[in-house]
Image (cartoon, rainbow, N blue to C red):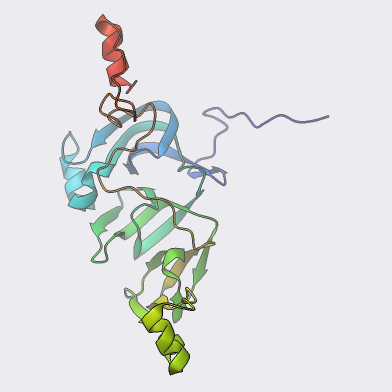
Length: 258
């Protein structure tokens, strides 16, 4: 006798835990910071407030310090169960206790207000400081490594409680006559492993299980997808104007990006 898929309701969904490898359930009772486009469904009474405007200025002033990414984040406020996912990538939660973690901006999905988000000095990364839970996505399971270690830049998700990395370049392949010819003509190519990030000191380095980065979009950009308001400015990719319905139906059509 075959069994069907698991069917959840607000009572059977897990609390602040994974539903499966690709979906995380936040048991919301207050506020969480949330990257736009990562909430796929929710139960309960939840409001979403933009960063930089709205009734939560005091919370935002104390916990969000990245102007470059402000347009990409909201505050979820209320009570209920909130499901987070990101294009079927692996999703997991992690806990910080009076610590600091730097993570790729596109991998961070959500975090509790006990953590403070800051813009990293390294482009494309954000830093979380404090105590609380955060949710992140990765292309494959995350593995934790101790420094000293050199890692492929594309496999790096982030690092916790250790200094920022430096670049390491292996120029040994250029030595000798053959190496000189390769450098001048490009014949022979390169190994693809000449550049790494080097970590030293205490702490942990977070790696994903592949060298293929998650596709990212520019901060503040609207994804070009059907049904996303503003993605084509009311026009399809071919440039033809979509017919608008009359009256209030046309308003709903514009509201939902159709």
